[in-house]
Image (cartoon, rainbow, N blue to C red; front, side, top):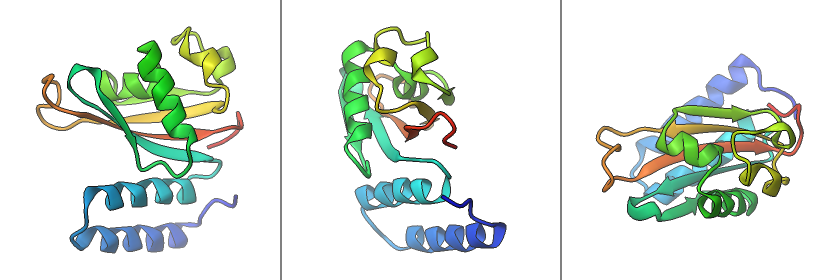
Length: 147
């Protein structure tokens, strides 16, 4: 995939801003965000949003393919992983190759569809309270050289 030029990126960001300016439901907005991330970030194979709620409940939404959901299920099953960590503790978590990753000993060997991940926790005011949801956006690549 060719990396967009500055002009193309500015046009795409303007399109995105226009799309957000009209009233829409949250699912449509998040689906647009993941589709745009996949379009604009070179090497991204999959994108999705993980919502973690009270008591460890979770919802995997706005994924453009099934891989983000499958990886979210594994992270919640093992109680570890980059998306979970980004959503609950850190703002940004990145790994370059899960085959060499040691932070998540159960998750890393189980998530071989994704070689590389960048997770961004979306922190809202008061989201550290257990009653609040934690939001997380992620992009993944099957290639070590992706993004």
